[in-house]
Image 1 (cartoon, rainbow over the protein chains, first blue to last red):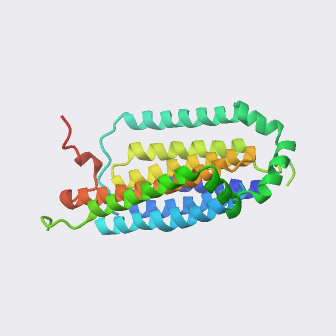
Image 2: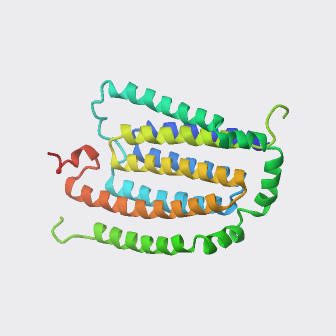
Image 3: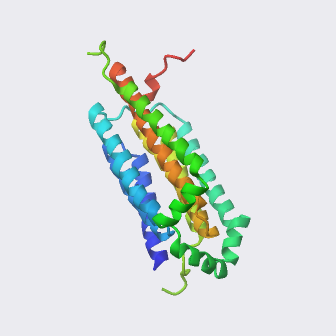
Length: 179
Length: 106
């Protein structure tokens, strides 16, 4: 059952990714990306990361994509996108390189020691991990790890967000010399 | 259903993450509009997040999920600043075409 859900949403996300990349209309690309983010939330739930699934929907689909959609509408760049640059031979070369890279990474992932560990321990080890996963991934468990072991990165992230707020406000403010 | 694994193996998530990362890389290279390049970068970031969470599940530790939490926060900050830059450039250039932004070219 879990595998069925995973394969359905995996195919949906790959199809949506291809459509997003090959799309002329930036608005449609953004909407496809929102669909991809919801598929990712499903993957996180399947992996037991319940807190991250909610954060994914709230932050990525709910904030980042809304911001992008607002900018697309503000700049009115939805359609038509400027014609693709004259790539010539680079386009098929690029596609084959990407195909080689993706298959290489997938092959390494399937044959790597970590993956073979997953295969050999998928029965017992995952049962061991499942006991932990059954409780892990909820807000409380993530918070315990976040605020004990990763407290310093947490505080630094808050400084980073402050810098981002200031930077975005300064960059996007109305300048007196613009029309 | 017989024949299907009981639970989804980690390799499946890794392969999916690799494919999505590759598609995002294609998008960054092929597209001309800065906004679509941004969206492809976000797709690549999410693919890496999926890898981290898959390994967090495999090894039964939560560190991967906490790292993904930080990646999401940093991605949000990056998008905010990046879009502000794009808006600023668009104000003076009337175009979101990355090939037009070539003032520093020798």
